[in-house]
Every structure is written in C-alpha cells, then in structure tokens.
Image (cartoon, rainbow over the protein chains, first blue to last red):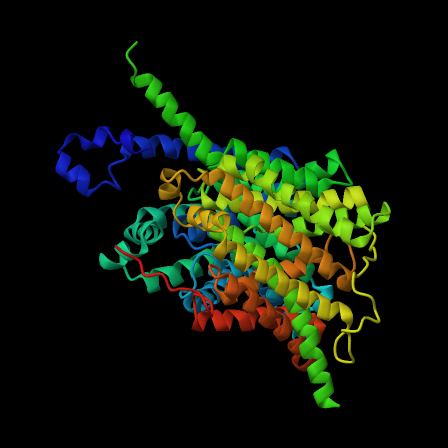
Amino acid sequence: MQNMTTTSTTSSTASSVISAGAATTSRSYLGLAGILVLLALAIALAFMVKGYVLFQATMLLSYAIALVGLNLLTGYNGQISLGHGAFFAIGAYTVGVLMDKASTPYWLAVPVGGIVCLAAGYAFGRPALKLQGLYLALATFALGVVTPQLLKYKHLEHWTGGVGGIVLTKPEAPFGLPLTADQWFYLFTLAVAAVLMWLARNLIDSGTGRAIRAIRDHEMAAESMGVDNRHYKSMTFGISAAFTGIGGGLSALAVQFVSPDSFTMFLSISLLVGVVVGGVGTLWGAAFGAAFIMFVPNMAEKVSKDAAWGVYGVVLILFIFVMPGGVMGLLAKVKSSLARRKDLPV
Amino acid sequence: MMMETFVQQLMAGLSTGGIYACLALALVMIYQATHHVNFAQGEMAMFSTFIAWALIQAGLPYWVAFGATVVISFGMGAVLEFAVIRPLHKAPELSVVVVFIGLLMVFHSLAGWIFGTQIKEFPSPFPKDAWFGGSMMSPHQVGTIFVAMCIVALLFTFFRFTTLGLTMRAAAQNPGSSRLLGIRVGRMLMLGWGLAGAIGAVAGMMVAPVVFLDPGMMTGVLIYAFAGALIGGIDNPVGAILGGFLVGVLENLIGTYIVGTELKLSVALVLIIVVLVVRPAGLLGRHIVQRV
C-alpha cells in the first residue's frame, strides 16, 4: 500500500515526506475509479433486484455503517466494545420515537439519532477512560445488557412502547421520482453509507486519525508526544457510537419496526464478530463483516436446524483459522506476496 | 422478621457466590496463564455437567460420576488448548476472542443437540436432612461453600508448595525465561486449561441442582463470575474468590431489596462498573506500573 506513492514524489523527497498523506495521487486515482465502479454497481442493484433481496441489501449497508463505527473505536483506537448493540438500539429508538411521537421526517430523524448517539457515546466514554482492556470489555458488556432492559422499563413505556415496540412506515420516494419505497430507501441508505465512508476515511487519514491510531499503538508514547489521550479517546467513542447509531436508525426504517428484543446481547457480539471477520482496523472490511453476520447464521440454519449455532460457531472458528486478520488481512497478504513476486528477478 | 430475611438472603448470596467464585477462579487461572479470558468457560462447565448427568443416568453413584466428570473435563480443557487455542498463538487478540465466542456457540449447541433442550433435574450430593443444614441455609448451600473453600485450599497449596504449581506460574509469568530453564511452556498451558476445565465442571455440578440443568444455565453465571473476577482483580486468585462471593451477595440483596429479579443483572453490573471506575484494577488487583 505505502510503496505505491511513486508519481507525485518526483519533485523532491523532502516535500513527499511532509505531504505523505497527499502524495498518493496515482493510488488515489486508481482507488477513486474503483470506488466509482463499486458505487455504480451498487446503484444498479436497486433496479436489478427487488423485494426481499433489496431489503437484505439495505440491511447489509446499515450493518456495514455500524461496523465502520465499531472499527473506528476497536480497530483504530484499540478500545474494545462488547456493547455496541446499545448504540445501534439508541439510534434505532431515536428514529422510532421522533417519527412516532413528533412526526419528524426520516431524513432528519436519522442524523438526529446519530447526534444523540454521539452524546451518549461521549458520556459513556468519558468515565470509561479509566478502564482498560478486559475492564472496558465488561463495562461495555454491561451497557449492552442494560440497554434492552431499560427499553422495556415500565416508566419509559410511553415513549418506547415497552415490549411491543414502535411500528414505523417506510418513506416514499420524494419529488415524484419513479421509484418504489424499497428502491428509494435502499438508495438513501447507500448515499448515507457513501458519505459516512468518505468521512471515516478522511478522519483516519487526518492528523486526528493519526492521533487516534497512535493511542492504540502506544498510549503513553502518544501522550508524551502531546496527544490529549482523554479527549481523543472519549471523542472516538462518541464518533464511533454516532456511526453505529446511524446504522441502527437506518435498519429500524428498513425493518419498519423497533422492539427491545431486536437489540439483545447477541447483536453486540455479532457486531464484534463482523469487525474481526472483515478485518480489524480496516474500513472496507465492514462490507465483508456485514455480509458474514447477515448471511452465515441463515446458512447455518439451512445446514442443520437442530445445531444451527454449532454450525455457525464451527464456521466462525475455521474462518479465523484461515484468516486470522479477517478478509482484509488476507487480501493484504495476497497483495504483498504478488508484489514480492513481481520484484523477483525473472 | 426483617433481620431473618436479611440473613437468609445473605446466606443464599454467599452460596451462589461460592459458585461464582469457583468459575471466577477458573477464568483467572486461564487469564494468568494465557492473558485471555475464556468466554466459553461457562458453556464448557455446562457441557461437563451434562456429562455428569449422563453418567448418573447410566447408574453410576454420584461421587464416582463426579470424579469421572472432573477427569473428563480436565481432558477436554487440555485438548481444546492443544487443538484450538495453540495454533492461534500468533493471531491478534480480538481474533482469539471471536474464537472463544465460536466455542461458546458450539458447546451450547452441542449440549442441546446431544442431551436435548428440556430442563432436567440434577441431584445434589448433600442430603436434604444433613446435620449441617439449618433454618438459615440448606445443606446444599453449606455444601457448596464448603466445596468452593476446598478448591481454593487445594489450588493455593498446589501453586504455592508444589514444584509443578510453581513451574506453571513461572511459565505463565515469563514464558521466554521459563523455556530457557527447561520448562515445557506448552505443556504448562495445557495443564492450566485442563485445571480450569475441571474447576468449571465442579462449579457446574454445584450450580445445577439450584438452577436446573439446561444448555442456557451458565450464561448468567458466567457474567457474574466474570464480574467477580474483575472486581477482585483479574490477576489475583484470592481476589477472584472474594469478588465471586461479593457479587453473589450483592446480586441477592439487590434482587430482594432494591429492584425485582428482572433488573437485578443490570443494577448489579452498573454497581460493579461504578466500583471499577473508582478502583480500575479491581479491589485486590495490582496496579501495573509501566516502564517506557
């Protein structure tokens, strides 16, 4: 990846060192073309499939957004979270309550859900600063356990609808566009995913992103170099929660229903599994991870109804054995071995 | 009357706390040896308990089945370390966590598949009218605490006064130097996993008469045990025991006096987190000073 920064470094080595982030012109042109092709394919999908498949594609995108969020925290900042399902739930419920009680339009409700999660994530991340590693895992786990129970809580029933949850309506295409509700919402989700992916990429490549990664690699060294660990860590928690919350809000609209039972501990675990399967500390891994956590449990059920979990578990273990670094880790390995082969004398 | 309920709940808490303490100890042992937390520990214990149940159904007397189960579980833990965990010693930490989650699912599903999902009764080795029971505590509760204490005493002796125990600790603390001294670190890890499996099995057999035997019986227990291990300090076996008992008592008292059983887990967890924010390394944990 790094050694492809060739063309624009001709002017002088010194300037290329300084502008290491921007000196990737040839790579970014190639990458941009790839992304545009992918985007075109994703848009075309809206007109090629419909019904349940389109719904699955929408869900996949919302999970992918959530996974990008968790990966920002766990993969790039090194803070483990076993409770990100909680933020997924908060995002979903914010959208649900806003649309149900305040008749907020969906395009406003989804970002508001993100902002609520940003605040919630920051508020949780601040005291959690003191906890590290396993202790943070337990704290986030508690968050994942507590949230669905709170959603069921009697005194919040007026807002959350208790165990019954909230029923939502799927938004229709605006401006009289000739699209079905399914198609429109898929494209809307795709647009949100593309924008968030762009934001995440820019965040990671910026100075802030370098600080975030420095904290992961060596907290004390980062601090001694002037990185404000407390600020960056709790801010990353907030941003991560915001991504996951937006994913949750979109999924709520796709399912047209929110209830406490959709956000059990299993969701939090699945999100972590998705991050690891896709590749820890990668952005595009989210797509693979989302596909894994969406489709593999269903396939496992088809293989054996009685032992579906067993099949899923075995697949998961074998997957890690084959790709300890996730899909993106394997791709990087293949890429580097190909590059090495090219360098060998013929 | 008030006082009597309180004491009764306290005692019940101590009894479940004994079970949490056992499992917390198993977690701490694997953590000390490998720096991983085995999320599948609870399901492994559940599976062992099913094995014990099958042996008892086959007509073996309780204590024979008990002994056989402990031995089988020891083997199971050791084989898992060798076959599943050891090949991953170079994998990133999170990947290992995910493998533990996978193991959890496999054991859970396997138990339901082999032994059926309907709830089964599991016998208690302590007769209902035993002399050590009283109005405050049932014989099983007293027995559970006694068993937990025995395990702690045995482990303490093992790790403090036997060569094998000391070797194991050395291998865990500094694998590189231990290897240079001729210690087979891999074998020690296997042994550690085996011991943890055996301890987990005992915890499972003690908890099963109370919560009944089904594939989901250990999920809640594992959470409490994990919390107990952390609140005591994940690197401290004595802390794990203390933490286990503390969590047991806390859980019971909260369930009785503050909120109903529904929110019990939530409130207990939140309380534990609050304690941890004040003392981030656990009550007895060592605060590691890092050299830069």
